[in-house]
Image (tube, rainbow, N blue to C red; front, side):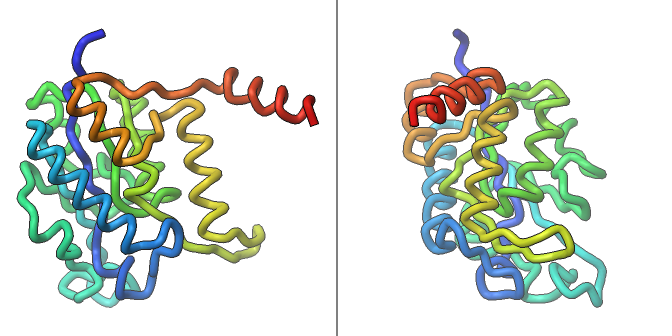
Length: 210
């Protein structure tokens, strides 16, 4: 197996998720921020290019409004060097940006995703990347979710993050801890993702044994 040509995509690590109106609840935000910093440092040490993504909304938007403190990159990201910057206005980091072209120019075949949120911009970007032909990795402890309640029901941050991580690993991305990813980078090996069939078979076998 050839060594992955990785890029680390750090999505929307902005103050809105830390001190603003969309506080990340699970995993605990200071823990995920620390892991994001570790991932960036390991990427730079291992020659993995780092792409920083920032979501910006029009002035007057309740969240991520351009020019507001909430829209600014968090110091964990702002204080570290990156190789490419992407400003986006939609969930996917590919939509309306030059990300695909930049990755192609760098001959990247594997995209590692960290940042916020697990269930929204991360999942959208991961799905987009898979359909574009990339292998994808997702750092489950360098991201996070928040709780929702609407006409469809309610879900805690932990439930949302857990379920999305399980689903992503079943088909779309190799879901791993930051520690496991750093080890893979240092060894020059790929992380293995699951499959829909294997994930379902394992769940059925567990239920049958109860």
